[in-house]
Length: 164
Picture 1 (tube, rainbow, N blue to C red):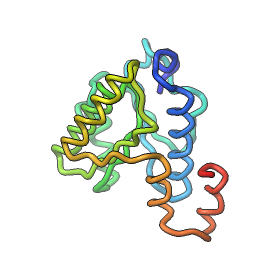
Picture 2 (picture 1 turned 60 degrees about the horizontal axis):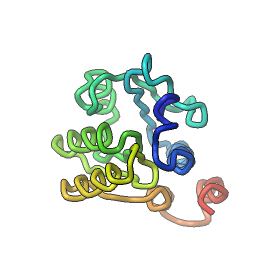
Picture 3 (picture 1 turned 180 degrees about the vertical axis):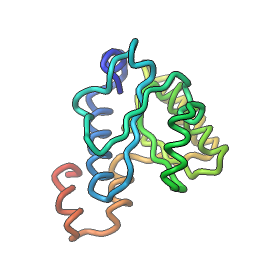
């Protein structure tokens, strides 16, 4: 979600707000956060609202993150079986990254309210294609509550203000 890309998106404020909530949930649960920047020289850096010292930020040129050697090596080194994906241009980078991860055997969840494209038609096509391909289509709250697992924990109390 980069400086020069965000203004062209559908519902950018919603997408950024929900991505910020996902990042907060990941921090609370010690889940790695990996952000990519597509051609940052041209599209700018990640928007300041999403800057977090816990995130690994990697530049890329490929639309699928898994086609980028640095990202692929870093992601594989995390030794995870699942990936939760949010992003912009959903119908390009999100679709291609999710498809690559599924092909490699990862369980993929695409956060529909934390992804965006320039048109609603592209967003809908992205979700339909990924659903057919086997990705789980989820919302920010679904992800955060699944990570939390139960109410009453310190993590739940820390997240409550973001998920109300």
